[in-house]
Amino acid sequence: MALSFSCCTSLSLQNHVKESFKIRSNKCLDTVKNTVKSTGISSLTISPHDSLKMGTWVKLICGASFEDLIDIRNLSLVYTLAGVDCIDCAADASVVSAVNEGIEAAMDIVPLRKPWVMISVNDDEDLHFRKAAFDPSDCPLDCSRPCEAVCPANAIKLEKGASLQGGVINERCYGCGRCLPVCPYDKIKAVTYLRDAVATAQLIRRNDIDAIEIHTNGRLEASWEVDHHYKLEERQ
Image (cartoon, rainbow, N blue to C red):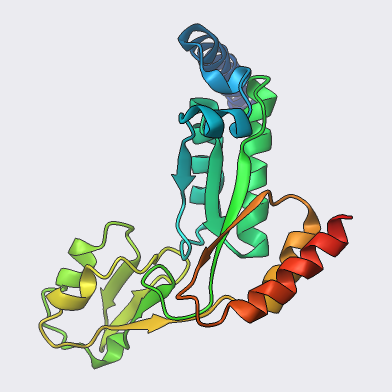
């Protein structure tokens, strides 16, 4: 009997918690809806193109190298509700999907117009397209780990064992460079990379990307001309 009573009590408590959570969630959604409507956010009525012409266009920059899918989805949700006209993100299929998931979640809460989705690409070395890198096993155990403390993205995590373990969380690092000068042993390097033009062309065929930001020095524009024409032919 005691076991039966305990199980029934536990189930009853679980159901009560679930119902309470559901009520609180609904209240939160209602609060968000009312806030968006009462503040008169322009994205309810004004398109990104019109905002651009009016000089009121606003872009959320997730970062050309930032690839934390959960954070990107949540940022896209919140800033869509806030009324941004464009969300700029890394030219990565999973990242673009996360942005669109956040936008769709926001539009399920309030009937907003969809902001543009923009991807950032490069054709040469660029500070926006780099990651920090180091081998934690090379770090002295008694290091004060200033890199970990200074990182604004919480992209460096180190744990002590026989040697330091962990290092850079690659998807969270967006290459800000703050960790580079603070390392007392000069162990951290910046690794730059290029977004492949062919892979980018394949990505934009998905038709859930509205704009491209190209970081270029102008020396390799021929490859982008090929992809530009390819894109136009695909859209026709």
